[in-house]
Image (cartoon, one colour):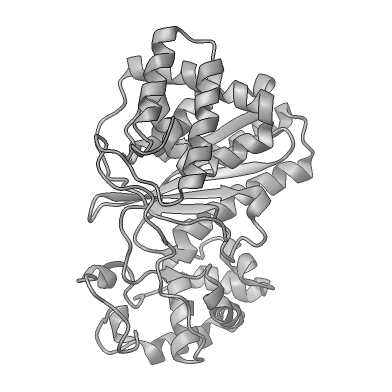
Length: 379
């Protein structure tokens, strides 16, 4: 798997002011043009899928370092700034209702890029599966509300999508890069960032979940009546949280009642979807996940049957791994991976200096970039 980590992404209400958005679009177009012209479209996608670069880019454009709005505003700005006919890169989807138009927009852009029907369908599949994985296969309490799909005229892609937890008003962002995806259901992310690490989260994409994935497919291929009997056999007489099934000795510190809220034993599953799975007989977990109607409760139910009846345990560890930055938007973030952050800052610094913008705007951008650098690092 690529980098994973967590950053402060609190939910903030309101919208970016229009005067700021207009300037962000202008600056984003200049920086993107320089990067694409000098380094190529593939490197641009690599930068988008790098959480360090993405955060720094948002800051250079004039947005808060740590706000959840960085995700939605920066991708929205890039959607307006990038011209497919000029850059060979386009952004499909977006926040809320805009995310529902992603597949349609992929077709439109694909035809504009003269991509083959097969390539367009592959891109649509990548968009659909990446969203399904983060909304269903990883369950940490962050249902998606934003999905931005970056695609190039070469058929490469990247995804930046975000989910929110209304309970504690935090967000979690997922980065994908096509070149790094070997299997959609086995640690496919380039990065996962958020400011809360859950004590328990169902991660069916972890390598430790290999056996559970295989067993879940076997169970889903059974007659739904048999699956119903298995679920009934493991469901207690009254609803319990998953903490009842976590072996003693594993930490539940600070979990509170959060686990019970979204990782409870499912009261029901989508039986129509399981009927489709039974009739379709999926060959692997990716095919199972792609079946219409297979959602979080069904995936969780299959995982519990696999663990409790057959002993094939999934991973209950949150895939978030490291601290991305510390301090508020007025402080000085301190990156753990200094080499990666330094490279991101240097690339942005060169792009800003070469941008065809006014001296005052260039100076402001460089000052914002300087605030991201630890005090003992030369600019």
